[in-house]
Amino acid sequence: MRSKGKRNTKKRGFTLIEVLIVVVILGVLAALVIPSVTSALGDAKSEAAEARASQVLTMITRYNQFYPATPIATADGAISAADLAKLVTAGYCTADDLNNQLTDTQAWSFSGGKVIPTP
Image (tube, rainbow, N blue to C red; front, side, top):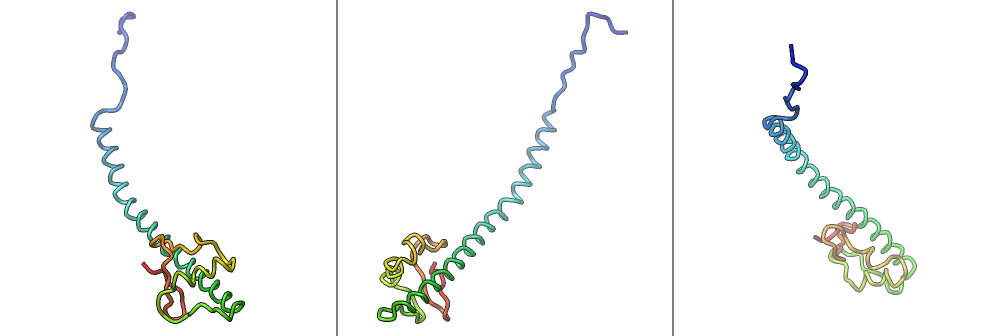
């Protein structure tokens, strides 16, 4: 029997091994998740740039319909900054709307009848 004056002095808690195992498991999970998150961010940037390119093409098409005297050239190659400025001046967008998400610049090109972000 236990005497009345003594208490159970055994402390409850985690051992060093248990804590190390949890840290290792968390490290492995982080190593598995981080690459997929970074690739998802890259995919999201390129999808956003493609969507913006479609919007730029629509703005250029409408500009050319309503301002036939000063059209924006739609031949393959880079779209000049002066042509993009026409869209802003006509009120189709703001200058910030023309930035592509890949390079954060206003670099766009025509290729095969489509607008593409210039990296």
